[in-house]
Length: 237
Ligand SMILES: Nc1ncnc2c1ncn2[C@@H]1O[C@H](COP(=O)(O)OP(=O)(O)O)[C@@H](O)[C@H]1O
Ligand SMILES: [Mg+2]
Image (cartoon, rainbow, N blue to C red; front, top):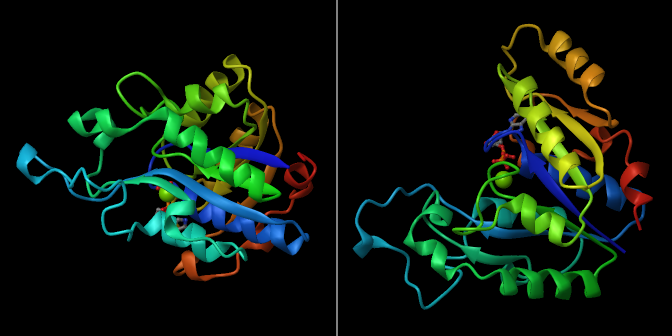
């Protein structure tokens, strides 16, 4: 049994795509795995409180893209509420009044239920490592409270070396195991891709688990073969 956490150098760097790749690779290796997205956020940017989400449900329309991709990437029969604790239509509920609805106890319970039911659970954070869950808690704090091993997804672009190394430093400082990192080519036009990759390999003291090339509609594809070091994850349990 393993529960591990997927973080990224930023939002939009490919955490969800890399999570799909990891889940497919684990399943190709004969392992059972589900993905869990504790807090899913949308695109809306509310200015007035009267357009906040309806507080009577934690799930809104149950249409968050990340949650649906994680559901589509597992062979297990999971429903939306099994693999998500909160869905917001807003982009950053964790830093607005809406954050008062986010209870760590619910995240802990939902995670415990998945961990009891499945061999492996991949947890996809939101935004980056030290992004907030609510007024006090960061995703890193929460991952540390469960001693989750961490996979770092680096979206290869300008500035990613800085973001990657700061994230690695923080993961290590919090006493967590960095299982490895994934290079995700989110920008096909970027020059010096190979040099950036080589710099990251030199400076990150954890294995490169795989490289995901730039792909058309990656959320629809088979991506498992891009994770070339999957035994680092299959051997966690
Ligand atoms: N390797 C890739 N090739 C092409 N597009 C990608 C790739 N990885 C991610 N994307 C696209 O970039 C966007 C952000 O990816 P996503 O996995 O949702 O990032 P995150 O989970 O970190 O926010 C999505 O539209 C996704 O389809
Ligand atoms: Mg995502």
